[in-house]
Image (tube, rainbow, N blue to C red):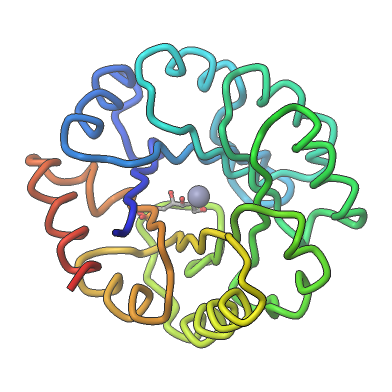
Length: 218
Ligand code: DX5
Ligand code: ZN
């Protein structure tokens, strides 16, 4: 069974609460929360106040993707705002092991994100410490970009390592996911799929979400 995590970055912010409830009703498994600081990525989105506002609306896990420099400074705030998963970019964490322990110290599940060019080897020594690996299949910073196919072999590489070491780690894909691009990623072993524009740009969110899920499960 695969999981779909709609990204609220693509939602209508004037009615964010309704937008969250609508994807929950449509069958979303997690809610993906994209936090951008204008430094690590060339765009600014929102901070923990937004997570705090939507947290009481749903029981779905909140999957917080920090595209920020110095994430250690903000992890406590996002934990207190109700994050279930916090993922940090390996490219933004010179002391990655410490950052992972910090996330766990607040009772939150830690994950690590790899940009499209970052090799799987960069996280091989923290695999025992994390619950989630997120592969970027676009350059982070914006929704609605084109899926980068060259990431798929990395997904397969990690899925094989996880199997071989008998680890329990979710493999999540983020960027350009739709009912076509999900297929190769699911076949490579990914288990969780972020979808922003492919769900929120559609009038019928349920139909869009279910079509993506079905394509990933075939
Ligand atoms: C990109 C974000 C993604 C993005 C996905 O920086 O991390 O989560 O919102 O949007 P789509 O699905 O439109 O590529
Ligand atoms: Zn994201």
